[in-house]
Image (cartoon, rainbow, N blue to C red; front, side, top):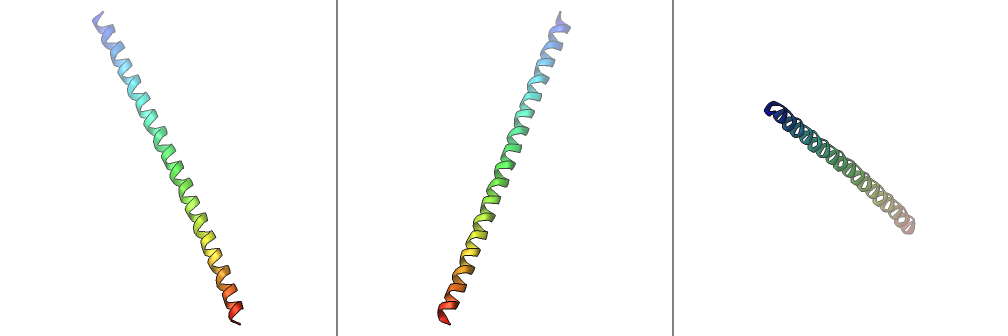
Length: 65
């Protein structure tokens, strides 16, 4: 029975390792997705800021004319 018990323990250890690796991988993917979303929001905010600045500059030029 010793061999069977060792094989069972080894299989359980491998299964746990695979599960841990899977969880780590899904966490990393989720982190990258969150990072990409945040980058997109920053780009959108920067574009909006630039648009408002350009619009304000045009208004200011029209006031000066």
